[in-house]
Length: 212
Picture 1 (cartoon, rainbow, N blue to C red):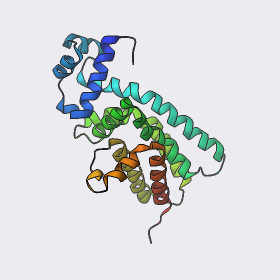
Picture 2 (spheres, one colour):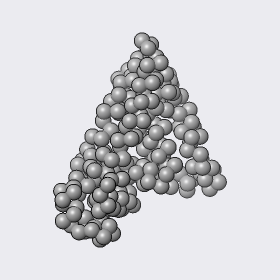
Picture 3 (cartoon, rainbow, N blue to C red):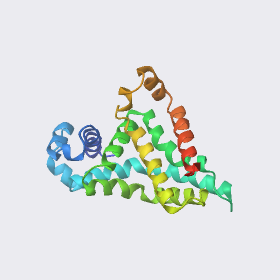
């Protein structure tokens, strides 16, 4: 994660604890105790608890943002002067995040992202939103180009559904497991690529749907 073992250990422990208990459910003292560090080290490297959270998101978001931007730009380049393909735009933005579940670290960051994105504390939400804003605006602008005939209110609601579906799947909080057969939930998680394709089927149809 970094070339500084103490800083790296604090980041890893904080990420795990925040993902398990939520930002406000974890104290700096509990982080330092679990990381075998002291408060002085946290203050030296991150200054505040908010600074620690921001450092986690900045580190994890950098490769995710790069992958999204590259994929989105490819869709826009292929479209030329015409409207970009809706499904490909959705895949470019959603796919890299959902596929983080392929690694334990990625799965932890997915849970942390989902938890913090709905945290009641606006400071926490702002940390999450800020690291993703640039690529999210690129995606939103491109999706608007792909769907020029949707009015502003409908587009807002559909975009809410896109982000909501993506974050709920990334959170993987077990709610739907209680409602379906255990083997179906297990099989859905077994292949993140297929999971993404199912999500794209649903969201692409939703973007194309019009009120009667």
